[in-house]
Amino acid sequence: KGRLSKEEIDRMINDAERYKDEDEKQKERISARNNLEAYVFNVKQALDDAGNKLTESEKSRCREECDATLKWL
Image (cartoon, rainbow, N blue to C red):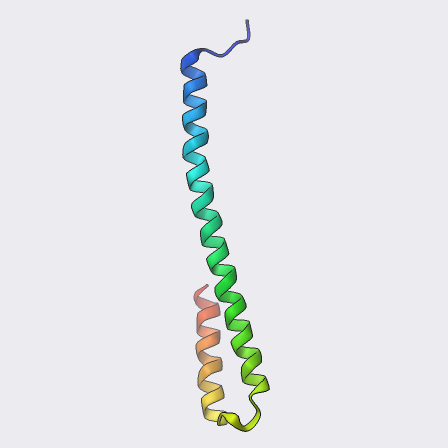
């Protein structure tokens, strides 16, 4: 009466374990993406704060790479 069979319970446990691994991998991907995005924004801020330490050409090249990285994400 409304009870799950041993096979159904085992299948549900196996599914949960499989999805747990997939969820963990997705969590790691999201974390890596967020870390890279934060790093790029920090680099852009450092470029703004660099003043005369870098030429405008150097700053422009770095900004282009930052923008390309964000677009890639």
